[in-house]
Length: 252
Image (tube, rainbow, N blue to C red; front, top):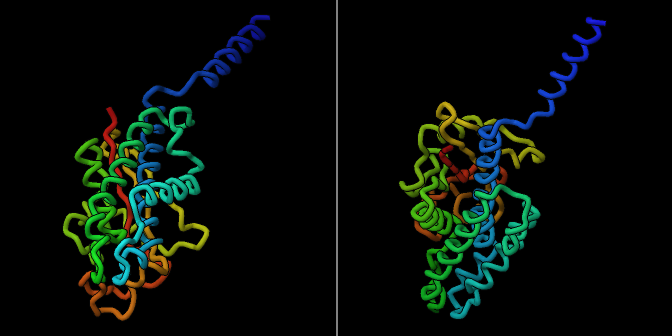
């Protein structure tokens, strides 16, 4: 009888341990990494939207391009929802970390603000290059957001591909690019580096960016010739790793 009681108590103890919720810190880590992922996708969704309308933006013969902040916002919302299933306009009831909701709202606001600042130049007729490309959108929007939130958000690239010194990778990003440099299959292009670093003090995430067809107008062949923005083309090919969205959030 005593042996049966001992086994029963042991079984109850084990069941209790299994049913206990994970520690609050573990939950905080998961929430922070998910928040970082959503922020990276939102910034890249803005980049994708700009790339989608690059020909319209650069058309020298068309003064009123109708690439308005409202048009951009609508396309951005569609792109983000396609990639996450989330509707940015109804985040209050979304099943995402609470910390992510105000940050996504702010990043959306900063993304629209970037497009607003380009409206005067977009309307100038006869100008072939307006300065608004995915890279400038990503750099300027990330800077706006970081100034507001103090969360590290950056569009970066391997050292040999960096054009803007502001986007130079830090030591962590350099190491992450080495990990991402391993050729990925077409089905593995969505891989993300997402981890807790600095002895548990920070969450870091790298969302890789691969060259698409629209990217090659500036980053493709012929290597060494100047693109529309004045930079030298890198000779990149479709599907090659071209950069990443990097996020770092401190764990409190």
